[in-house]
Every structure is written in structure tokens, then in C-alpha cells.
Length: 70
Image 1 (cartoon, helix red, strand yellow):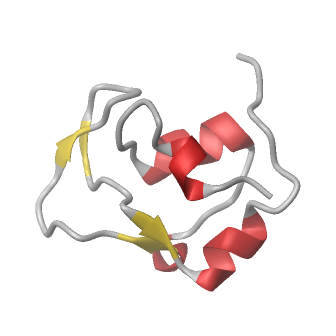
Image 2 (cartoon, rainbow, N blue to C red):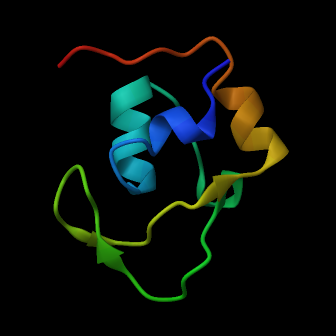
């Protein structure tokens, strides 16, 4: 299982980057956003809502996923 602290070790990233990086299909309801305003994503550099945690459903979707080489 991929741990969320491993995802965020290089800074907080957006849901789109998590989906591209891990090949997951996280939806908006699978992620926890603590801040109501967008910030700059550490991976893509765009202004997006930053994921600060995952719900149980989001964690289940990441089971068995590893980083996809781009």
C-alpha cells in the first residue's frame, strides 16, 4: 500500500498529479483538502487545490499502486 506521507515527501501535490504519478483514479471525494483556496502544486507548478490527506476510499484505490515512470 502506498502511504500518503510517501506521496508528499517532496511537497504537497494536486489530485491530478497523484493520478498521473500513480496511475490511480482518485475522484474529488477521495481526497481531503484543508485549504479552501488553490496553491501552487509542487509537481506541476499550476495553481490547484492541494491534497492534504485521503479518505478511506482514496486509500483503498492506492493499494498496490507504485510510481509510474514517465
